[in-house]
Length: 187
Image (tube, rainbow, N blue to C red):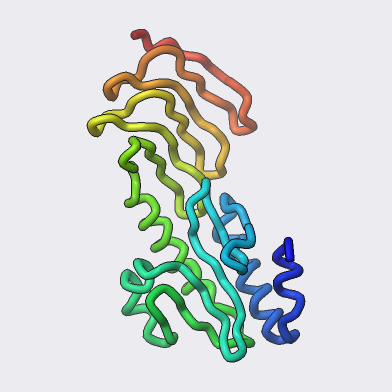
Protein backbone atom coordinates (compact mmCIF):
# COMPACT_ATOMS: atom_id res chain seq x y z
CA UNK A 1 0.00 0.00 0.00
CA UNK A 2 1.51 3.30 -1.07
CA UNK A 3 -1.29 5.89 -0.97
CA UNK A 4 -3.91 7.05 1.48
CA UNK A 5 -6.57 6.20 -1.10
CA UNK A 6 -5.33 2.59 -1.15
CA UNK A 7 -5.31 2.57 2.65
CA UNK A 8 -8.95 3.73 2.83
CA UNK A 9 -10.33 1.52 0.02
CA UNK A 10 -10.92 -1.66 2.10
CA UNK A 11 -13.11 0.03 4.75
CA UNK A 12 -16.91 -0.45 4.50
CA UNK A 13 -18.53 2.48 2.63
CA UNK A 14 -20.05 4.28 5.67
CA UNK A 15 -16.76 4.08 7.57
CA UNK A 16 -14.74 5.05 4.49
CA UNK A 17 -16.93 8.16 4.09
CA UNK A 18 -16.30 9.09 7.73
CA UNK A 19 -12.54 8.55 7.31
CA UNK A 20 -12.49 10.56 4.07
CA UNK A 21 -14.36 13.34 5.85
CA UNK A 22 -11.74 13.27 8.62
CA UNK A 23 -8.97 13.36 6.03
CA UNK A 24 -10.53 16.31 4.17
CA UNK A 25 -10.96 18.25 7.43
CA UNK A 26 -7.32 17.67 8.40
CA UNK A 27 -6.18 18.78 4.95
CA UNK A 28 -8.20 22.01 5.34
CA UNK A 29 -6.88 22.65 8.85
CA UNK A 30 -3.27 21.82 7.91
CA UNK A 31 -2.59 23.13 4.39
CA UNK A 32 1.09 23.36 5.37
CA UNK A 33 1.29 19.65 6.23
CA UNK A 34 2.61 16.73 4.26
CA UNK A 35 0.28 13.72 4.13
CA UNK A 36 2.18 10.43 4.35
CA UNK A 37 1.60 6.84 5.37
CA UNK A 38 3.54 6.25 8.59
CA UNK A 39 3.13 3.48 11.17
CA UNK A 40 0.66 1.91 8.74
CA UNK A 41 -1.81 4.82 8.71
CA UNK A 42 -2.39 8.29 7.23
CA UNK A 43 -0.20 10.82 9.04
CA UNK A 44 0.28 14.58 8.80
CA UNK A 45 3.72 16.10 9.29
CA UNK A 46 4.84 19.71 9.29
CA UNK A 47 8.47 20.25 8.35
CA UNK A 48 9.21 16.72 9.57
CA UNK A 49 7.30 17.00 12.88
CA UNK A 50 4.37 14.60 13.33
CA UNK A 51 1.06 16.36 14.04
CA UNK A 52 -1.59 13.64 13.91
CA UNK A 53 -2.43 10.23 12.42
CA UNK A 54 -5.75 8.46 11.96
CA UNK A 55 -7.11 5.02 11.23
CA UNK A 56 -10.27 2.95 11.30
CA UNK A 57 -11.03 -0.10 13.43
CA UNK A 58 -13.90 -2.56 13.64
CA UNK A 59 -16.01 -0.49 16.06
CA UNK A 60 -14.56 3.04 15.88
CA UNK A 61 -12.15 5.38 14.11
CA UNK A 62 -9.15 6.73 15.95
CA UNK A 63 -7.27 10.00 15.92
CA UNK A 64 -3.68 9.73 17.18
CA UNK A 65 -2.49 13.17 18.39
CA UNK A 66 -0.29 11.83 21.19
CA UNK A 67 -0.58 11.75 24.98
CA UNK A 68 0.16 15.44 25.55
CA UNK A 69 -2.90 16.50 23.55
CA UNK A 70 -5.11 14.03 25.42
CA UNK A 71 -3.98 15.58 28.72
CA UNK A 72 -4.23 19.17 27.43
CA UNK A 73 -7.77 18.66 26.12
CA UNK A 74 -9.05 16.25 28.77
CA UNK A 75 -12.00 18.51 29.65
CA UNK A 76 -13.13 18.79 26.04
CA UNK A 77 -12.76 15.08 25.34
CA UNK A 78 -15.32 13.76 27.85
CA UNK A 79 -17.80 12.76 25.10
CA UNK A 80 -15.13 10.46 23.59
CA UNK A 81 -13.33 7.35 24.67
CA UNK A 82 -9.63 8.12 24.94
CA UNK A 83 -6.52 6.10 25.59
CA UNK A 84 -3.05 7.40 26.42
CA UNK A 85 -2.58 9.00 22.98
CA UNK A 86 -5.78 8.27 21.06
CA UNK A 87 -9.28 9.67 20.65
CA UNK A 88 -11.96 7.21 19.53
CA UNK A 89 -14.62 8.60 17.20
CA UNK A 90 -17.83 6.71 16.31
CA UNK A 91 -17.07 4.48 13.35
CA UNK A 92 -19.47 5.80 10.71
CA UNK A 93 -19.63 9.42 11.89
CA UNK A 94 -17.60 12.35 10.62
CA UNK A 95 -15.32 13.79 13.30
CA UNK A 96 -16.59 17.20 14.44
CA UNK A 97 -14.56 20.06 12.95
CA UNK A 98 -14.35 21.96 16.29
CA UNK A 99 -12.76 18.88 17.89
CA UNK A 100 -10.26 18.52 15.05
CA UNK A 101 -9.44 22.23 15.23
CA UNK A 102 -8.74 21.95 18.98
CA UNK A 103 -6.60 18.83 18.49
CA UNK A 104 -4.52 20.42 15.72
CA UNK A 105 -3.97 23.65 17.68
CA UNK A 106 -3.01 21.76 20.85
CA UNK A 107 -0.58 19.57 18.94
CA UNK A 108 1.07 22.51 17.14
CA UNK A 109 1.38 24.29 20.49
CA UNK A 110 3.22 21.22 21.81
CA UNK A 111 5.48 21.06 18.77
CA UNK A 112 6.34 24.75 19.13
CA UNK A 113 7.14 24.23 22.82
CA UNK A 114 9.59 21.44 21.92
CA UNK A 115 11.98 23.96 20.34
CA UNK A 116 14.76 24.91 20.47
CA UNK A 117 16.37 21.47 20.37
CA UNK A 118 19.65 20.73 22.19
CA UNK A 119 21.40 21.10 18.82
CA UNK A 120 20.20 24.71 18.65
CA UNK A 121 17.74 24.09 15.82
CA UNK A 122 14.59 26.10 16.39
CA UNK A 123 11.39 26.67 14.50
CA UNK A 124 7.83 27.70 15.10
CA UNK A 125 4.62 26.98 13.23
CA UNK A 126 1.42 28.87 12.59
CA UNK A 127 -1.72 27.00 13.65
CA UNK A 128 -2.26 25.95 10.00
CA UNK A 129 1.00 23.99 9.85
CA UNK A 130 3.08 26.48 7.89
CA UNK A 131 6.39 27.59 9.34
CA UNK A 132 6.62 30.96 11.09
CA UNK A 133 10.43 30.80 11.20
CA UNK A 134 13.36 28.39 11.10
CA UNK A 135 16.88 28.98 12.40
CA UNK A 136 19.38 28.21 15.17
CA UNK A 137 20.07 29.57 18.61
CA UNK A 138 23.21 29.45 20.71
CA UNK A 139 23.04 30.32 24.39
CA UNK A 140 19.53 31.66 23.82
CA UNK A 141 20.54 34.02 21.00
CA UNK A 142 19.74 33.78 17.29
CA UNK A 143 22.76 32.54 15.36
CA UNK A 144 23.45 31.74 11.72
CA UNK A 145 20.94 31.58 8.87
CA UNK A 146 17.27 32.29 9.58
CA UNK A 147 14.17 32.36 7.40
CA UNK A 148 10.84 33.92 8.35
CA UNK A 149 7.58 32.99 6.59
CA UNK A 150 4.12 34.39 6.00
CA UNK A 151 1.01 32.58 7.24
CA UNK A 152 0.48 31.22 3.70
CA UNK A 153 3.89 29.50 3.76
CA UNK A 154 5.64 31.92 1.42
CA UNK A 155 9.04 33.24 2.53
CA UNK A 156 9.02 36.73 3.99
CA UNK A 157 12.64 37.45 4.90
CA UNK A 158 15.93 35.61 5.26
CA UNK A 159 19.37 36.47 6.54
CA UNK A 160 21.88 35.75 9.27
CA UNK A 161 22.34 36.54 12.93
CA UNK A 162 25.51 36.78 15.01
CA UNK A 163 24.95 36.60 18.77
CA UNK A 164 21.32 37.72 18.34
CA UNK A 165 22.01 40.65 15.99
CA UNK A 166 21.14 40.68 12.26
CA UNK A 167 24.28 40.82 10.10
CA UNK A 168 25.12 40.82 6.41
CA UNK A 169 22.56 40.90 3.65
CA UNK A 170 18.90 40.28 4.44
CA UNK A 171 16.47 39.54 1.63
CA UNK A 172 12.78 40.43 1.70
CA UNK A 173 10.54 38.43 -0.67
CA UNK A 174 7.31 39.09 -2.53
CA UNK A 175 4.38 36.75 -1.87
CA UNK A 176 5.36 34.67 -4.90
CA UNK A 177 8.84 34.09 -3.41
CA UNK A 178 10.79 36.45 -5.66
CA UNK A 179 13.46 38.61 -3.99
CA UNK A 180 12.06 42.12 -3.53
CA UNK A 181 14.72 43.98 -1.60
CA UNK A 182 18.15 43.27 -0.14
CA UNK A 183 19.22 45.20 2.93
CA UNK A 184 22.80 45.28 4.22
CA UNK A 185 22.69 44.96 8.01
CA UNK A 186 26.46 45.41 8.37
CA UNK A 187 28.72 43.21 10.44
